[in-house]
Amino acid sequence: MDADNSPNGIVLTKSEEILFDFDQDNLCIYLSDHAKDVFGDQTGKHIFDVFAEYPEVLEQFNRVINGREQAEFDVGNRQRWNIQGIFDDDDKLFQGVVVEVTFLEPETPEEPLPTLLPSTWVVEVADRELHISAAFARTFGLPSTRISFDVLNETFPEEVKELTQAAMHLLDGTHEFFFKEIKLTDARGNTRWLSVRGQPSSREKGSIPRINGSVEDITQKLLELRQKQEQDSKLLRVQKMEAIGELVGGIAHDFNNILSSIIGYTELAMMEAAESQQNPKLMTYLTEVFQGSKRARELVSKMQTFSRADQVRPENLDLMQEVKEIVKMLRASLPSSIEIRIDIEESLPEIFIDKTFLQQIIMNACINARDAMQETGTIFIRGHNRQVSRDHCSSCHELFAGEYVELSIEDTGSGIPSAIADRIFEPYVSGKASGSGMGLAMVHGIMHRQGGHIKVDTIPGDGTEFRFFFKPSEHAETSLESPNTSIVMDADNAARHILVIDDEVSLVYYLRELLHKRGYQVSVASDSHEAWDMFSAAPDKFDLVVTDQTMPGLSGVQLAAKMLTLREDLPIILCTGYSDVVEEGNISQYGIKGFMSKPIDSRQLLRSIQSLLAGG
Image 1 (cartoon, rainbow, N blue to C red):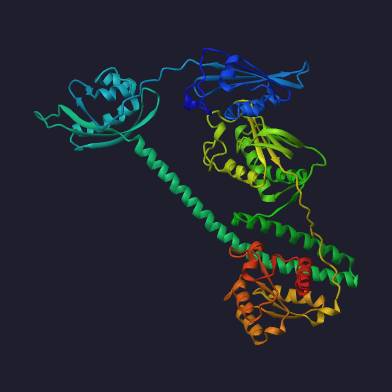
Image 2: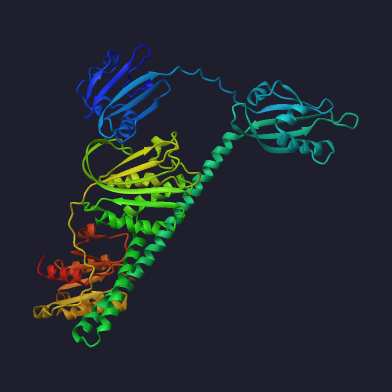
């Protein structure tokens, strides 16, 4: 192999055998003399260390230890590697591998076709002959520079017919010249686009004896134009998605305000129903309203995730439950001829990841599987606890080890074409005829952002398996999914005065009712300027402020900044359903002490108020 094809600069020659034996622990127990000369004495070393500079070898080795009997593949254009797995008599227990390198005869490179520069041509009308340049004849496999019309008709029938019609218009005087763009296949089978121009020579005795013209290869120009058009189209799509994102963000803000009122007043109604106990059905009805509002809240959350790529909300997720939910959504995108089989190990640890990210990973893999199977076949989705001793990531190409939750998605499709198998995680590399080519690049980013890794096992014509390795969750969290139907009045709160500001009037009055039930004094304002007038008139009157972020006039952050100039120690809780400016991680830079996402969770709000008033 040439040195530039060898990652470690070693030149492998054909004269001597290179052979390795590795045991069941993947340690080298034998290597041939020439292997020692090339790689040094690797006895006792792990296979990942021996072939650290050969990622292709390590990738194929992993396929063998995962069940393939052997893997044969080329590295560069000079080496053929063979990795043979050794198993016990039942073909189950892995005993080791034998790695062998043989060498390929280098192919004599074809002499390149000439560059088809603009050249001239002449048609002799009486002789029915075309005179062309030597470069043109060689490029398109024509026998000489003088070609009869009969040969041309046999070689390029459609194109000659089109050009003949154009030439007839010159001969009868209808046109003074012609210009055509035609497509021809050259001697190597490649498509070339040509610009052909023609005009008659001077007339002799009332007739035209010949037609003169020029031909230019415009293939590269058309490719560059097409690439520019594709880039412009991609830019337009990006701008369109940004515009849609802005629209969705605004809708999400309004929806969150509405949902805050619906959820809040439903809880207040449930409190009243629980106290009176006069109509048992009323509590049932209100519970259904609350559950419906919760589903709407989840939908709005997805809208927000779409509209803000940087908005990540990881949580503890049960893999089995999530897979079942995602498969339900997928059914609409998969034909009935595709079967999905799920085998998730019981009692798997939860994984800590944004739910939307997990949906994107699974749906991307399954949609790719659908396309690879041409709408008929089986998708296997498996989940297992996996202790990885040492493995090689197909995406980042780094070694990884440790405790993981493995999610495997396998199809019975055509496999990934070998030409792109090593590049599938690069942006705009896709095995599909159409599509953005960003799917697996996005999956790569998600997995490594979460500390995970990916393994890909594919053979053209024999299916593909994606194995996603997630770190088990180490985070504990509590979920407040049940409605808040009981609030205890605290007489000590009567001395505390809270100012509530939101341009959604129904939400303001709900918050006033909620805080009254806890015993607080409450003033409300539905306009930021009205709120500033109230506060600036008596800054010491208020113990805490709850304000919305997005309002006409002053935003919540701007209003908070003005208030803090009068009361530096004032506790402020900022509420928002959608904002590009402020989030929980950056509120401290504005001097704000509390943050609430809409729809507002009443328990969380009351706890936050109590903590801030206590000096927390």
